[in-house]
Image (tube, rainbow, N blue to C red; front, side, top):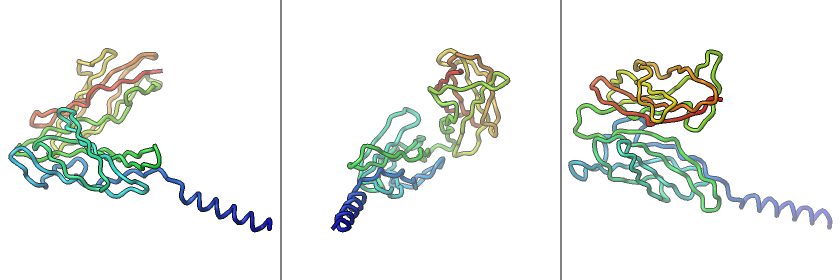
Length: 225
């Protein structure tokens, strides 16, 4: 009898564990491709194209929230769907970023995909670079300076024309940083700055291409311990 009771409890535990909801996994983005020029899609009119966003179905996800941001204006569009594809009308000749959040109504946790950028093709023959993507230090973090009292700033630039000329680094203990501290060429995406302990610094990076087009990262801040 005791063995039967133990087996019954064992099977109940197995049944309960199978029914336990699991957190959703991040979705893998498919299209539009990262740092690309999107030339496909239905032309709605001279200024607007219908873009088909696609991603892989994520494990344990019941629905998805697609976020698309106009990188020129920071205006965002958000769509909730049970599918792994959504069509959105977007202005031509504008850079965008997009990402997907996986959701499951049985749990509170969500999962964020990568953030990809693309340029919605228009009539322009030259395109501005994508806004510089800051890699580190990110805003709000505390960092330790090295033995030379320096911190290394790192970023990532991209341009569908592949004609980045240089990067301008703005760095200051005042917000916003207005003076160019230094420049790097297209292949160098890091810059060392001299810092003091117990100080908050502000920085940004502007990407400039060979046609004179530019795009800025926006201002980031960090504290030196």
